[in-house]
Image (cartoon, rainbow, N blue to C red; front, top):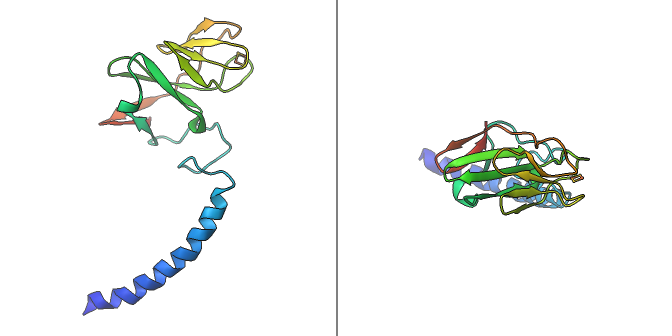
Length: 142
Ligand code: FES
């Protein structure tokens, strides 16, 4: 009969979560939709955070993860790279991949998806590389 003892307890817990859920939903409006701790926006997620699945990153291209302030690329099949999304010119967040270039919308700097090097000024320094690892289908911060 011990299983029956848990049921009332669970109901109480669920009722409590219901109230908390409303509070959490309201808090969500203030912007912590990153799946992590929110943080100050632009902070690289802590080690072991799943960033994306391998199938989400196109071969010969990449994706920008604004909330994580990262760019994930796959220059050649199975070779994944990550870079900070902070443009090295004056700090705007890069926001697009165009062909094999990572593009900053502010002054038009471009960076290689292969190594983050500058392919078009005014930036003069490469994007900062970020350590990642692939575990099965997931790409995680290392
Ligand atoms: S801040 Fe990116 S090009 Fe100027």
